[in-house]
Length: 469
Image (cartoon, rainbow, N blue to C red; front, top):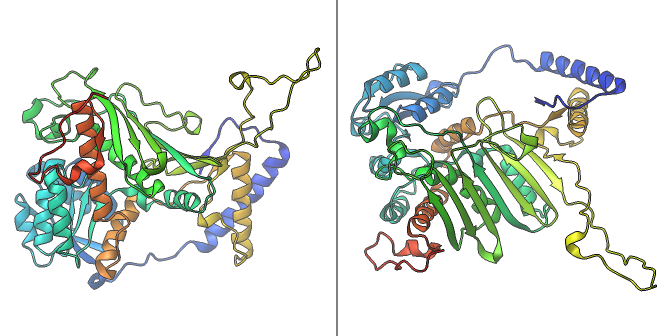
């Protein structure tokens, strides 16, 4: 639970807070397990990890705390990264430089792929052809032709799980906000705004293009900010709107980080969805301020706006959990005529009218805070105490688990139960399509229709560049 240091408390508040803390401590003591249960070895999914660099080792650190799977093999072309990955997971896995040797192991049931974007498709394709359940980090594919080929490949391998690493889909807060949207709590959702701002973001390491660690900075290997950042948040808009865009316009350029890279260091995009709905997006590398949550978080977040309310939400990171705040639209005041000395009614021009007073942010309540009537005394009192503290602004609801853990564990679970991933191949390919077409619109300085993906990469004539946007 996050503290709000600017909130003043009365003596009565302090007494209530102390009482709530006492109940919480008692509940923790009663519910604390004496022995941590460990899943039977024969029920664990035997998995391998291809790519043990920064992202791969990060995932291994999370997988080390999940008992649904057991890591039996790792692969990386960098021996140092390979050894680091093995130490991180701590299961004494077999180590390979060639990923095809890992895929040839009969004991490997599932594979996590965390290699650079330009080889995502190649490794994912070989993993599926080897009969492995496959988890690939976003963006799922790099080129238009890979969109078409992977779609067909997945259709031919329906018995295998194929999941993409879009962790917001596995967040309880994001799922709750999606339910709010679907139930009309926000009215008609018409706009989404999202940003991922950094300062400075990725930095060039010695060796320039010859250093594999710099792959994100060169178009030959990378989709730049669009692939590495915007992909997460365009997927949020697709999810909330329940649709994919009609077209995208935008601008991007390399203005500030002139260190040899050739990707853009700032991008601004507008996506038009069916029904006039729109998403506006920005990613820059010169400032990391986030204008949500009273500036208490930085870098990335989304704002979902409807006719009856809005929600601010951010996925956070390992030390800053997912949080969300709900702002119902203020009650609209009817415009009344102003009296004048001449006895006639006069109306104030709209541009000069004072806006309605903004409402106070409300917490987005997770299931753990919902009152069902089936709670025991302590559980019920804890829920009331938390909800009271939320309304006072002393604390805010926070997700109790990192969505990264949930997405990794759910993949392993689906390998056993055959369940459909929330971030499945369709979600992943829609997301990759958005990345490809967004970069195209900035490069060619024109509006790009999403229907153009049907011909791109197929050998059919593509739409010629039209007027500049």
